[in-house]
Image (cartoon, rainbow, N blue to C red; front, side):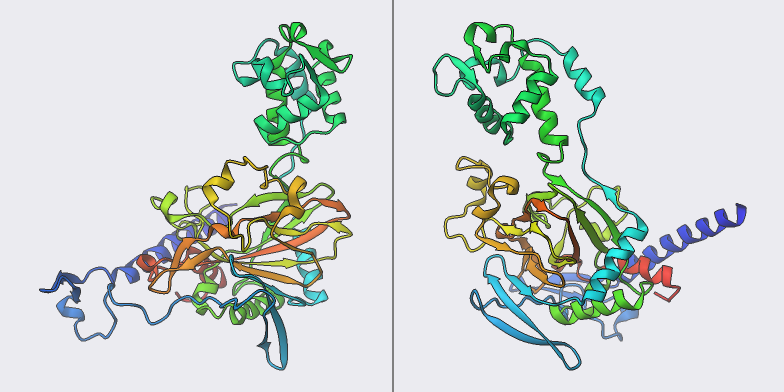
Length: 443
């Protein structure tokens, strides 16, 4: 026990030592004396003891940078030699976001290997059901809600003086973006022991005693916790891809590096592979993989924090999504606003034309829908590049998600390529440092 504890302490000290080295290396670029010339241009002068070195000072443009493929036009096909003697087709699916499809990017054996590793590690479920205790607690809540559910006219949309099943459905959509079926509504009133709805309608007089507080909380629970209604219902795990990974995982990462044409240190500093499993009703409503610097600029990029606890900003430059099996029915990846000429994100968020974030309901309304097929990869850019060639602002057109599994199951893997911005290009990702430490190599 003591020996194990000493090893853990040594590893922690080694991590802190590695981080200190990375910070010290970064400071080589920031300790220079910088002033402005008569034209207002900024220039740097290195400390005297470093003048003989040829390292550029912080304000000079770095030699390396990120890379983005030009989509050319929808349907454009490129042939890329990503391994010696083996070519892959890369098909443009959209120009905004820059979206590409690569059939047969993974072999059947590689797909099976990733699934087997995920099952061996065990997956963490993100699906929650409403349990018996929650239902009982709702029965104890009785009275009028303080929200708009306390207003009869909010339920009685057609103003006919009664609340029907169709009225309840519409109220759920209007207030919670919740798409309920007849059976869901029957179960809700039964579970809350509400007698007023036994004949399938509620008059204005009956509404005076209606447990709107219980209904309000029940709908909230459905939206947040029930697998069919929550934003995401899946299970997942993480698999390492770096120097300590097995040969198959390292080979796939090398292929990704050639596909993206990014510097090796960027690929090495990216996240582990996230493997996701969806069962019946599994889905992930529309979302972004990156985060805007305009909105979250006060936070550091997560790959410079990487402790899973500190609040940080997702700086995922590229998503490479792998389909690991064939899905019997459903399970498409939808891009609701790809190449839309009328899309304005702030207006889209208001959901006034419909809740198109909800891919259980509106999957096939999306501008681009990619069908799952074993071995296929889909690659898109979550961010643009800035004028220096580093991570720029998030692309609002990169909104995407996974549609419902209507039959069978779906296995996918997310390969997120993180990248720095211009003011942090010299910093080392903590994922890369951790990989070096665990592999026993020098920094």
